[in-house]
Image 1 (spheres, helix red, strand yellow):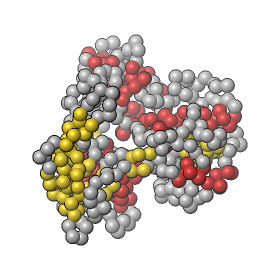
Image 2: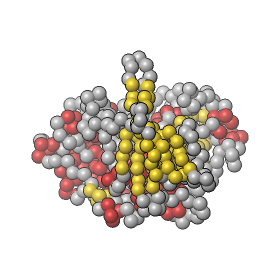
Image 3: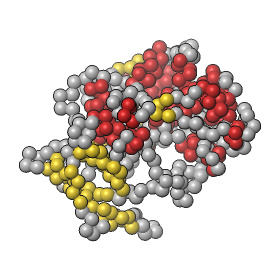
Image 4: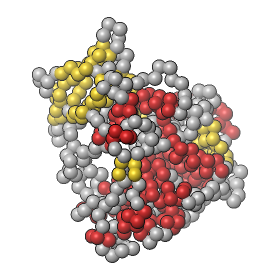
Length: 484
């Protein structure tokens, strides 16, 4: 512990945000960094716990007390080395991770937890600013070739780890730029795309080949993959959930990911003739998760007349629920920066009908209030509240309902077995086709970016072991010990 009692002396300090009126006028990131002298104090708040529960809370197993201590001692390069030993892309997780590590921080039992995520972001940004982030190509090549399908966080992590092992790696991306959902699924105001681009430059300099506009199984046959010694499928869970609701086909009912993707593409100069715009409209976002929040922020930047959010579940408690005590991930109300920008939030609301005019254009939503009946040993039952029907004016309804699993194109053409949820089945990341592996949302279902990076790293280790018979790639809890 860098400073004995630091957690008693200093309070938590987080990044602040630009004023709402200023930030909604553009699509740039709007956080204001914590001053450098305050970061030293924040690092010293780490308690050096006997059992650092933050390790188990982090899917990557980040060495959190170690880099916190280095920040306190102002040994920033050492902090960077420690951080990058377990996390390929702290610039992504430091912006986008919900920080399960902080929810399991021991200090969080009695005070605000250590600001782990912000410290992580500060370390990697200092690394780029000082020029410490340099390409690290392997000293030798194995002669083995690997195709990575998908360039989201799982695919990028797998590619970098496999390249470090000396394999020749080609990453295929079906869109026109690298990044997967990082690129087009997350708004620019949460992740400016230059952050992705600067990392891709490093990866290319390390020897990884990227091919965009290549949709394997569509405009690139799966037979062409036979040239590779191994394949890693990291295409994500991109089948979007819809609603079996009357009027769903109305013009103005739009999938959230289409709405977000179009906006980012237009922002970077692409022409979308029929771009879905929220300008001057009554917008209703159905779904209370992160994607719904992103739609709210984007709608406010479009200049929506009103923005309303529906969630079918009950409103979570403001504080940690007794059902999810420390160190578990808490059931707790989350208010994002997009919510703060303007939104009418509603819980226990179910959409019964999308109402349209004679032209098929959406004009309103019919809803009903609901309750959940909980019976031990049985699935929760949705009960409609009698007499609670309501008509809401609505010109644009955005469906932010998550994803049901990966698309079937690759699994069907490659003969990959899937589970009951349509995820690609794998044992130790290896599918039923021995030389084909899978990682990320494609294997585990829709999840967090930090889990995707972890999956990519672990899958790369298994691929290396398959190709070479042994591996020195690290794995969670085993450091750099070789696997034989």
